[in-house]
Length: 344
Ligand code: NCD
Image 1: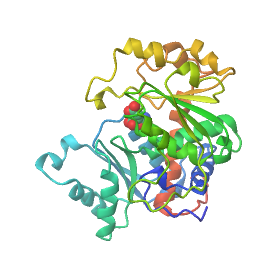
Image 2: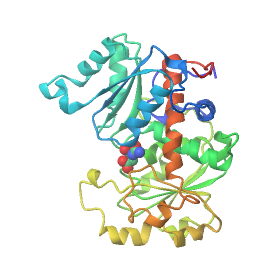
Image 3: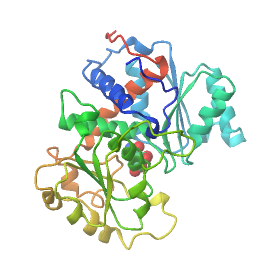
């Protein structure tokens, strides 16, 4: 685990297969530890995690805060509406204020792509030691969600030893609003790195042709791809064509708040063509799990009965797995190395 070299976690495009293995292995260890009630791991005692969320969040923020507490870190959170941002303070100055209070990790969510990256660069430029963890920036990236999805899938295929190899050669269908989804983008980097075959499915307005080449080159600012060989990406316009042979199906929320033009005829039409139900899922030809990052538009992306069917739906499992994944990320960023894990 000593090969961990990331000072920040901003985008999964920068992760090697060994990085994915490190995070999943650590998450698996954290998941197995009895941390209920008052029992906490002392690993991050004396460290401070500050969450700076400039965009609403239900699960990500509380999951990070719980993860930090389970490692005995101190937790501080920032709310834009009641802060000096409304008095005109710049985002960088706000961040610097928290760093001056001793923050070791800043967990940042912003509606604009690139904000966590430029914060990390500016803070590093002024000699600060703080780590920045991207909790979702615009349409760009949501690394902790990509990792918890990967962990959930790997655990589904190999519960005892989930790792990148658990995904190799598996066919994962991602269906829905790929265009507006930072979750899909992070999943594309993670799944292809592990050698999965990804089938993206959706209407042209929500899934442009360009996504077939999404991982063909590293993103701007990144020298080279740390992964030697990635799994393929294929596009499909119909679930009837995409589902046969799938090993898992990931559904995405229709991100209406991010749609600036009329991209859908109606939610009902969308559900009929791209919504998932038990009947549709039978097209896979075998029992396969269904994932969704939440929040779910019940009856649009997923039929309510499917969402509630714990034999098939891994949605709650994703939420549960988010905690050990975020514990692993916080641990790696705050200490930079492998832990000695004993409960307090
Ligand atoms: C996602 C997000 O905010 O990007 N939600 C999440 O973090 N669980 C997906 C979404 O908003 O649809």
